[in-house]
Length: 420
Ligand code: HSE
Image (tube, rainbow, N blue to C red; front, side, top):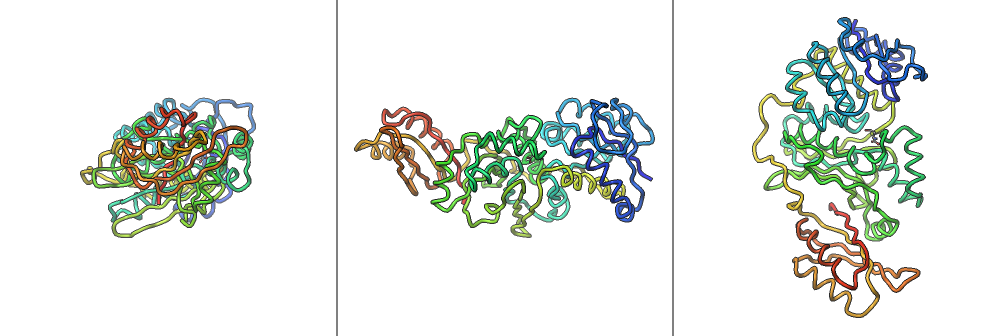
């Protein structure tokens, strides 16, 4: 028999405890041993968790219990779980964590501390989708050329409702919270940070990149308007919050931002809380993974897959390699990214304005691909929306600064990157 302790019996923890109990027979058959939860740890013992396991409010009841073989960390946060996971590993216990923030900051130290002790984290990225297993095992033959996907269920749920139903941002965020998709602090979701944590985990497995969230480009969905949505529809795009890791000539691009993608692409059709990740390998070509990216049972499914792998003795190096990966995998600066761009600005409705704007863009060698002008309802301004051919991020950022200086341009200029 294998005994498990769960640190944090919230939505996911309760699902883990309940599925381990309800599906005990099939899990014993698959793992070869009976798996039992001995203790769950919570902060507030008076709250009903909907589980039948023994609860404690002292994490040491798990960490220091010699009978517990596997510690499942589902607490959230970074520093407290780091200390506890470290202690659990030092005590020789295998660890399963769903904590992407912990891994975004401490995965390399934890790998070092874990050594040969299993430290598994399937549930940290894209909820129930077995993307970590796919990258660590299934695609191990490949140089990974790109990873691109919807890695946050809350924002995909929000964008889908905003785009398909014209729903209001605040109302739809509240709904996502009530459905248990959103992080405790939902700015993690809408600001793109949650997706960045997941992207960093995937980029470590694929490229061995040791970056932190502050090292990469992260933009959220806060500034997307119905104007952008309508433009995207008219020009054959969908807007999705994507995590993108791309190997290019000089290194690897890592970025999270709202992205216009062709409406005909598979990822564009992924709606609601669902996540989808496309991985391109040099041997296999494109592979695609789709499923629930949030929610108690879906995430618990991934947690339990790790527990079973550990019981089977089926783990391996935490990040999937025992020696450094190939060279030339340095993180590129944001300014070096090359892509297409959409710009939205308000300009005065007078002759010569377009010429001034295109002249400014010409200075940076930026070429316009398509353009749309929409009158504002109540004033003398018009909305000018256009897309550019591919150019370097540095150029578009400089051009935006210069455009904002023009008298004919009013207010901020919004920019959304395009991936073709
Ligand atoms: N808040 C996350 C999401 C949960 O919405 O995808 C899963 O990490």
